[in-house]
Image (cartoon, rainbow, N blue to C red):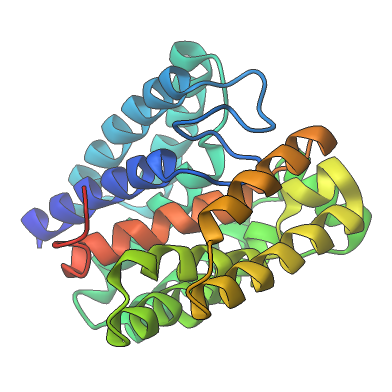
Length: 271
């Protein structure tokens, strides 16, 4: 189990890098530009992920040693503080939570498969949110303003965006023999379904509606084998003009990449 936890921790880091480098992505930092994040860059995101990498390694060790949940929560708080200090940003705050949650759940579900992992995620989230109030953040303010569930609701439900939306979308496209477009089918499904509080915070309900409409359009373009890359580039220009982005989608896309890497389903995809 300790080596398996360390392997999952490594894949959680890899997933975040794969998300970062996937290009183009509307409103998000990628290899073309910083999207709607004028304070970010590839270099700053990479510095942030170096902090995430150290955190997940320490978390895997804590779990392997059988420490209590409080110890793992403390490691997450320390990682958030280190990210601000060393990278000058909190851009991966949501991913620190999600990746730590999945790694902690994996230690408790002990290889029981995706259903068991999802149930363990929901159980741990219930314990976490029962003990503390939701922290003050842009996401929490969007939840308050719009009655959204956001990352908290996603976690309490056992990450349905990952297990019921993103992974099936990828696997369907792969089964149809369309390996090159499978990651974009996954991106489209997440855009169409995730209640993205970053979009809500920046552009209100209209912004979230735009992300969801574009997700459905992307899915259709992928299905029809149309030019979805040009579509994504054009939508990036629109997102930048409106200061629209989709941080929740990005975090869940990174998590999807991580899990598919861990299962071996990304092994023959271009690196």
